[in-house]
Image (cartoon, rainbow, N blue to C red; front, side):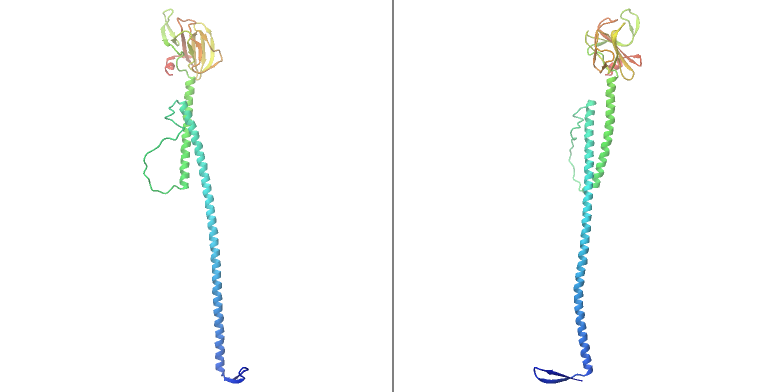
Length: 308
């Protein structure tokens, strides 16, 4: 095979002899070169595209993780706010309990006539002492919440007990007000006792159903308990007499008064002046005849006088 090349520049003719095997070899070599070149170009392009795709996937994953973390942080903040709101509400409830206990304690001090300096509900109790530092973790919100609940339970228990004590003291105060106790005169002395005695007028044995308190004529005769006046009149033997009905079936009688100062239906309190001491009726001198009855039966007034 002969190939003839013509050159316009040189105006020469030349020829190269190429055999068929050599031409096939050159064609195959050229094809392989083109294939290799195409493969290399494809590899370079694939590498560049793969890197760009990997970077895009990684960026999307990071953004997803960040969004998830943001949601977690937002949820944690919301939960923390809810815990703080609940703790604030619990603290407000504890403060309200404490204020009620302070007020109740103040009333008990007043009713029970206790030392206000010893039982001071207006100020925090004094504390002190040297404390050694203990290395420990701070209390968690759940620990604080549990402690506040424990304090709330303790305060409620104390409040119930103080209310029960208040009721007892009030009942005691009320009982002391309505049950006879003390002397029927502000000034004077007991001149005759309850029971059998010698009658001062005839010298015979007689039964005295009350006690006598002698004193200055015109001095105060006072009620020994609160109640309602059921009798205020002049009666044989007693002269001017006042009778008061009290609670629990008690009644008291005050006789020989110079003047009655109350009338039937009047409500009197313990210590109120109900008459002036005198010597009316069957009497040998200025005194008040004092009787105590329980369910209509006369009982010795001495134990009520000494019980004040």
